[in-house]
Length: 196
Image 1 (tube, rainbow, N blue to C red):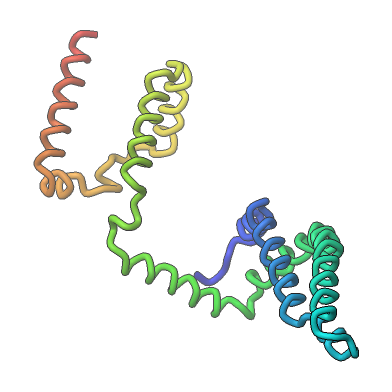
Image 2: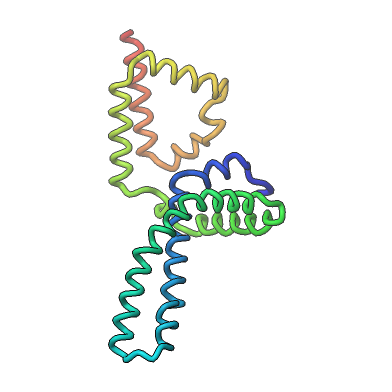
């Protein structure tokens, strides 16, 4: 992929989910940094205070720092996250980064291609739910809406047949059960059309 669609990249990165992700990652990074460098622990350890008292002072100072710093960081990230997202968009779209993002695309596609097909499919419970919802929708759809959907599909597809997209004969040859199912559906459709 030589170039990303800038509108799509910006729409994706400016979504609430990505904004929340950036805010969380930045907050966790800042919080982890303040914990690791232990500002007050380092300062207080140099003071001539007896061990247990120093530990209590350090613990209380850290607790108060978390209470004070936490909301300030959250407030800062509320505005800075939008800036970070903008910078991320520019970074992704930059011509100088095309090669590295191209390599990332290759890595993603390679990872997907190496996985078994069944690992890419949703769980049976999800597909069952999708089927139930689709059939429920079809059963309850208004006839006028159905006609408009079909008109849209026919306008979009034009004079193309299913075989332009899917090698139907190969699919049917590979699955005798599917062949019988299609034959049964076709027979029922013919019978229904004769009744009209």
